[in-house]
Length: 245
Ligand SMILES: C[S@@+](CC[C@H](N)C(=O)[O-])C[C@H]1O[C@@H](n2cnc3c(N)ncnc32)[C@H](O)[C@@H]1O
Image 1 (cartoon, rainbow, N blue to C red):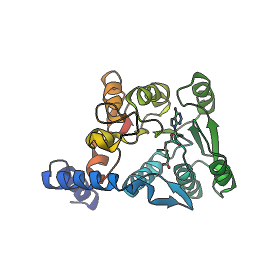
Image 2 (cartoon, helix red, strand yellow; image 1 turned 120 degrees about the vertical axis):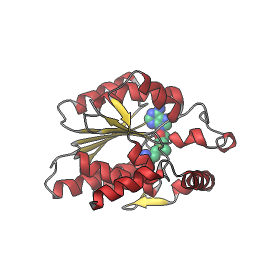
Image 3 (cartoon, protein in one colour; image 1 turned 180 degrees about the vertical axis):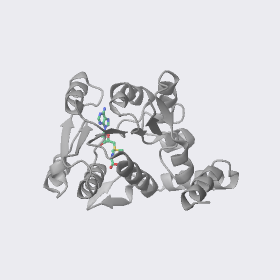
Image 4 (spheres, rainbow, N blue to C red; image 1 turned 60 degrees about the vertical axis):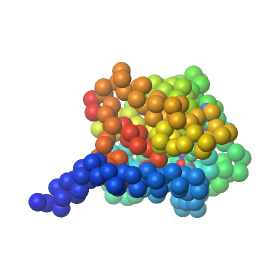
């Protein structure tokens, strides 16, 4: 068996490994409660992600070679810097030379904007301030995506069902065939209700419920289970949506 085939077999086995699933879920619950996703930075900017998901994004960005990455939810800018850095590496290896990251946030704090704009990766980054589901923002994004050959979409803003469903309707169609629309924080569905006392989302109303609603009428997307089974530790179970047609 080749190395690649062995890896694929091992990953597939994870999907039916009940002990591993149970332990992974337990770690997700306790680590989420401990605010684990806030512990990391990428090239100096705080990134609100689990490292496992960052590795999955690196694998996707290398494979897909996007010339545009659209991200909703900027916060401190770490995920924008991460994406821009991956595009720099792609370009250095013969990938799209002028690939860009487009970030949307309803509230780009002045100090965050300043730090992102001063960052060495900033030449690949454009930011739009406004709600990701506002008609004028969607129109600007569509304009910037026009003519792009390979588009990757990442949704990580307001995590209610209604908001994520509206984002999926607006932006998932921009993901090109073979690329992904990645929906973060689907994990909320599997965490205890008491973890989100000050949030409008929780179990039953979150990115995962929106993903499953969207997929009912969008067979052009499939959940990439190999990514879930590979990571096990992830804030985005069922959230790696691959555009297959
Ligand atoms: C989880 S943080 C994003 C984290 C970032 N992607 C990272 O990995 O570091 C969520 C962000 O979504 C933004 N947000 C909330 N509601 C929004 C909306 N309606 N439209 C756009 N952004 C929104 C918040 O201001 C916040 O900065």
